[in-house]
Amino acid sequence: MTKPTAPRSKLTDKQFELIAKALADPRRMALLEAIAGEEECACQQLRKEFPVSKATISFHIKELVRAGLVEARRDGQFLQCEVRREVLEAYSAELLRRTSGE
Image 1 (cartoon, helix red, strand yellow):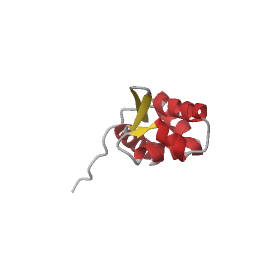
Image 2 (tube, rainbow, N blue to C red):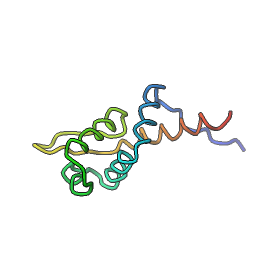
Image 3 (cartoon, one colour):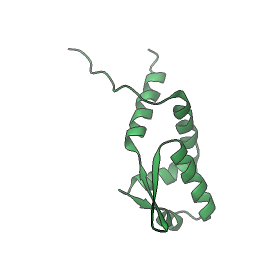
Image 4 (cartoon, rainbow, N blue to C red):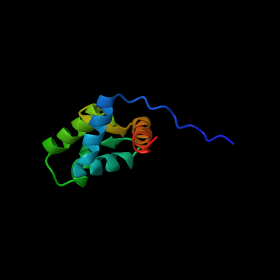
């Protein structure tokens, strides 16, 4: 019986590094977890959950978007965020590939 192969990662080295850096920050990781808990998460909701300034949340969301982990879109005056699960899956697959010793 052959072992199923893992899906090929589509991440560039640069994107892999951006994701690793983004996930290394505890506050960004907490924001990502909060966003992932919803189908779509309004930034206004994040401001209620996290006792930091609007600018701080905005900065961290910008970094998550830059890494490709979160998609943010305007809905009127509000910003809606959604986790890009396919990017998380590609990052996980690439991390496992790089650390498997093969």
